[in-house]
Length: 339
Image (cartoon, rainbow, N blue to C red; front, side, top):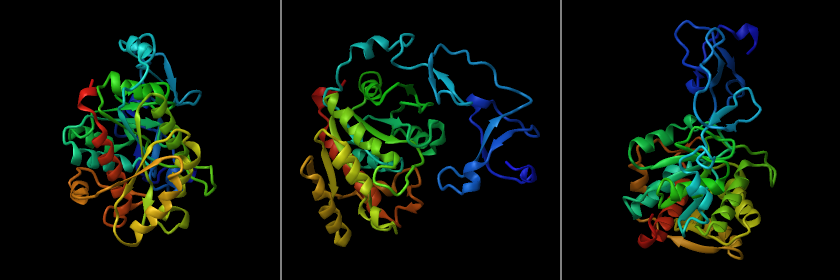
């Protein structure tokens, strides 16, 4: 922050487990970069420190360092490290026993996937495996907190450099194994945290990880389901219909075959999505999914749906595509294979 702006009011966010809890009247050191850039997801100043009252030293048993070698690096107890009570389970786990795994590009897909899954199976146990392509702290997501409180989401596993989930894991592979064998998930959703990095180039976007997650699901004997990033309202040509993010992540990064959920959208957007998705049919199985009741299920969610700043009513195709993936994945849940 510039010195001349030191007394200008601004919204700020403090992760109390990292910096302590600021009190009224205390000085705080702020990082205002995201605020000054006007970022849609991360438009807050971040509290870096409370200089006059440092937080206590960590006392937990964990030895995993996340956000490594940054001033905000934090120690967590990994579900897969030797000190964990679940270490033996993760040491011996070889696969996820056919658990459906939905991969998605954007964090905003998560509630829609859950809506679609619960429309098909109201009591299905869903675990979110959060990648580190967006926000690193899971605490930044109000969506996951509300979904948990409403009983729609069982738990969150943070993997890679992401942290703050109910369970921590080193890799997406162990995150999926933990979802299945530690948290008793019947269905997992893998996506980055809030925020999204893109450069307008073929490979320079954080959603590439959706294709890598699909590979991980296949390696672990999961039923991989690709949620398409779809838009009927995005002004950018590369994101209209099926986004180039999905076509690249699933068509070029994903090496293992998966089910691609193609939403049965009406009108021109439906025709375009089906035509765009056809390019993925050489490697994957295209599954057209009906949308009966999906809009009602989306409207009943306890969270405000927003993708790239657009609401459900402004770009319903985006959320219906994710709901279709959730519905198809729920249809793959095998009662006899439940933990």
